[in-house]
Amino acid sequence: MSLVASAVLFSLAAASNFPIQPQFTYNGIGRTFPVTLTGPRGAKKLTLRLYRLEKNETVQEVDVKGGKVDLAKALPTLWKDKRAEVLYLQLKADGKSAGPSLVLQPMVNPPVCTLDPETKNPKWTPDEDNTYAGIRCWVDQNVVLVTDFGEVEFKMRPDCAPNTVWNFLQLVQGGFYRDIIFHRIVQKHPKTGKMFVIQAGDPTGTGSGSPGYSFILEKSPLPHDFGVLGMARSTDPNTNGSQFYVALSREATQHVDGRYVTYGQLVRGKDVVLKIASVEIGPKDDRPVKPPVIKSAKLVNPKDH
Image 1 (cartoon, rainbow, N blue to C red):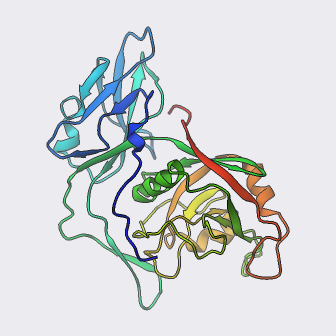
Image 2: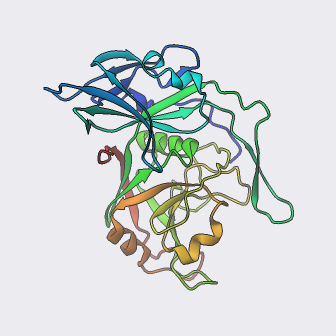
Image 3: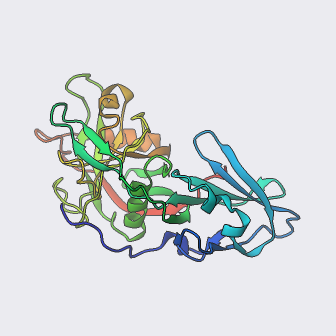
C-alpha cells in the first residue's frame, strides 16, 4: 500500500444541475474563479453566503445575480485572507438556502505524519512553507451505502478531514464500493465489553486489499461517537486507502480519537448499522459467518443548511 495516487479521474465539481456550478475543480490563487449560479424560478434576490460548518458561522454574505459569476471578484476575501481552513459557500434565494453548498478546500501542503517512537501515536510536523496555492472545490453531498440490510447515509465532514473526504467521494463516484463485504465486525471490545466497529472497503474481502494507493493520515477533531465514519489502516499511519469503519459506541472507540482519521457522520440508517453489527460471527478474526454486503454506493444531496 505504498503507491501514491497521481491523478484524479472523476470531477465531483463537474456534476450538473446544482445551484452553484463551478467551471473548474482547481482554482489557483490570484486567478479567476468562475461559477454559474442558478436560483429557483421566480426568486427575487440571490445571495452568496460564505460560512464555517461547525458553528454555522457566517464569514461573508454578498448579493449576486444569476448566471456566470467570478467568485474572485464577488468574494475577494478568498484570495486576500488566504484562510487555511475549509469553508462552505451557499446560494440563498430570497433568504432561503437553494440546494447543496460548495465546499472550498484551501490548497496547502499537508503536515507530515509519523509515529512517535515512544507512545506509538501519530504526530504531525507542519510543512515549513505552508504555501497557499488556491482552492479545490466540489459540491457538498452525502454518501449512501446500499447494503443487503438496507441503506445507510453519511454526511461528509471535509471541514475535519478534506483530503480523506475527497478520496472517499472519488471512490464512491468511481464505482469502487460495489459488492464489497463487511469483512470485520467487532461486537465486543476486549477492554470495555462494548460494541466496537464494523469494517468494509476491501474488494478482496480479506482485510488486506486497497485501491492501489495510500495517502497521509489527516488530523481530525471529529470524535468517535456512534455512527462516525473513519478510515482503517495498518500500523503505518500513512496507509489510508479505501477501507473504512463505522464506530458502534463511544465507550469502545474513544481511545482511538486522533489516532485514526474520522471524516463522516451517520444521518440515516441506525437500525441498518445495528443489524449489520449483530450478525453471527465466526471463530476467528471477527469475521462474519455470512458477511453483509455493500451492493453499491452513491452520492445524494444533503438537506439544506
